[in-house]
Image (cartoon, rainbow, N blue to C red; front, side, top):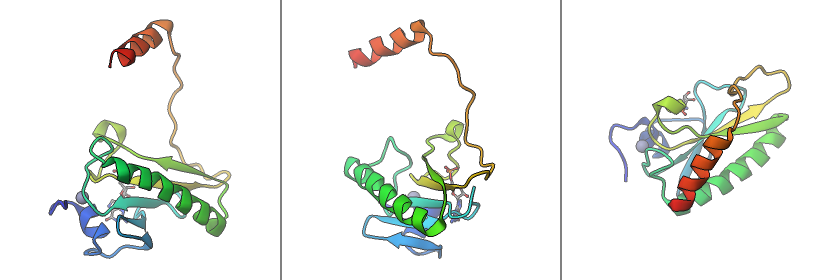
Length: 137
Ligand code: 5GP
Ligand code: ZN
């Protein structure tokens, strides 16, 4: 399914031009227009899924395999020192385009890219609460 109002549907379908690194029946991989670092890429499914919650199971598995292949190939090409694979769901999590995508962000020593969070403490209370609830599901 496509969403007529979705820019990533149009890019994935080739209706809007993009710097395409890879394409198959299910996905297009493009360079991000506002990269966090040199080579920052996005994996876009060709069908519209707003986020990970909606994503088809089979496609989810394929997306991870593709991420592995792209990261391996791009590491050799870019000569980067590491990679972040990032995937945002919901505005609160930083999602700005509501068509599922995975960020492939090459990391270079001293690049100054910030993706971090302030580390908290796992309390016994919270741990027990979550473990109890997940076992009930
Ligand atoms: P999000 O914040 O939703 O996880 O990531 C959206 C990403 O899409 C951002 O990194 C942004 O730079 C990128 N982006 C938004 N519009 C376009 C576009 O038209 N072309 C490309 N190549 N990237 C885009
Ligand atoms: Zn879409």
